[in-house]
Length: 279
Ligand SMILES: C[S@@+](CC[C@H](N)C(=O)[O-])C[C@H]1O[C@@H](n2cnc3c(N)ncnc32)[C@H](O)[C@@H]1O
Image (cartoon, rainbow, N blue to C red; front, top):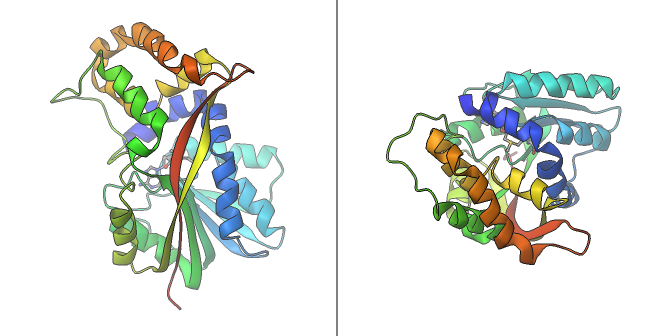
C-alpha cells in the first residue's frame, strides 16, 4: 500500500488526464446502471484525487453528502484542496484503509472506481464497505476484467517482456494483488458473497480505451502504471536502462492503433458491479 502514497501517486498524478479521461465513459455507465439517490449519503472508496467524489456530490445534489476515502494521505490532500477550490460544499475527505476501516452504517450508496482490486485482505475490506451501508444500501463499482481481456494491457506487457522478465526477488513496493485481482468473475462475486452482499450483478463492459492524444503521451502512460510499467519498476535500474528501447518498441506496436487525429485508442474491458446490503 506504501506504493500508492509514493511512486504510484506520483505516476498517477503525472498521467492523470489520460487515466481519468479513459474511464469517463464507464464511470458514467456505473451511474446510469445504479444512480446515487438524490439527497443521499455516499462513500467513495479509494477515491484518489476525488474526481468521482465531486461527481457524486453533483448527482446527490446540495441536500446530499459524499465522503471520499483513500488510504493514501497524498491523494486525500490533493482531493480535499481541489474540492475546496471548486467550491464543492457537500463533500468531506478522510484517509482510511478500507481493510481496517470501521465506518458506521450511515450511507445509502458506496462507490469505487478501480479502488477495490488492490486489497490484500479483500473480504474484510468489502465487509467494512458493506458495514458503511444502511440496510438496503447499494454498492456500485468498476474494476478491470482479466488482463487478457483488455488488449492494451496484455500487449503492452508482452512488448516489455521482449526486454525484461519478472525478477524472482525485488525490493520495490507493489500495489498489492494488482489491478486484475477481480478479473475472474467467481473471485469478484465470491468476495462480495463472503462479505455478506446480496443481489450481486457483474456486467461486462467492453469499451474503447483512450491511451493518449499522441504516441508519446500513450507510451508514457503505458509505462507509468500497469503490468508493463510494473515489470520495469521491479527490475530497478536494469529495468530503467531499457525504458527508451521499450518505448520505441511500443510505439511500433501501437502504430496501427493510431487514429486520424493522432490519438491512440485500444480496447479495454471492465466489470461494472452492483450489489446490495441486505435489508
Ligand atoms: C487506480 S487508483 C483509482 C483512484 C480513483 N478511484 C480514480 O478512479 O481516479 C486506486 C486508488 O485506491 C487507493 N487504495 C489502494 N489500496 C487501498 C486501501 N486498502 N484502502 C483505501 N484505498 C486504497 C489508492 O491509494 C488509489 O488512490
